[in-house]
Image (cartoon, rainbow, N blue to C red; front, side):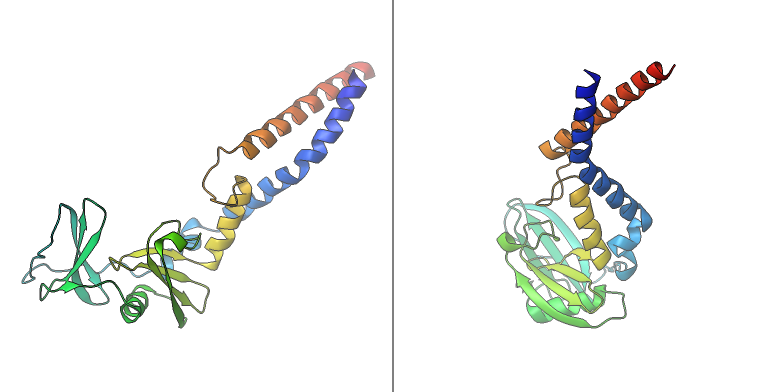
Amino acid sequence: MMRRFARWHIWLGWIVAIPVLLWLASGLFMAARPIEEVRGEHLRRPAVPVDAAGLVAPRATGSIARIALVDQAGRPVWTVTTADKSVQRFDARSGARLGPVDEAEARRIASSTYAGKHALLGISAFAADAAPLELRRPRPSWQASFADGTNLYIDAQSGEVLALRTRWWRAYDLLWGLHIMDLEGRENAHNPWVWTLGSTALATSLLGAILLFRRRRRAK
């Protein structure tokens, strides 16, 4: 029986060795750098407060769920979200309704948001159903790419900055996906791979403890 346990212990050890190494290596990497730096919080300028005095109220249509007054590249803008999740924008100075964010405006918003010292390399548009994995939100967006590897995502309807992603964030995200065994969505830590390999690692450890206990008893 002990020989059979020993064989199982060896084979199970080989099966769980690589996942355990990945868990340890990814955990060490994620703990090695402050999460604020990974998120690029130092590369994002704080929101500029907007004085509502003298501004024109928005003439929105539909069932309104939320109204916000924001600064977009130096211009005060009302963003109105309706019950069906659609977004309307209004120039807060003139009251004029604004259309979707175009490339030129996306560039201005990106440049006014980014606090780094590197140049803006380009702007790319993405439909909601083709959003990059790193955005994590099914929204139509503009991706502003900077020379240091930073990507800013700007909502094409509201002008909101949806996300800021750095090179460190992408490395962290990949290793997080390996850590939780979910490389596709990188969100589900309760998937069958984690349960199976975690249970196998636990069984391997228990077998090792049993074998060690029996060997010590024999030695006595």
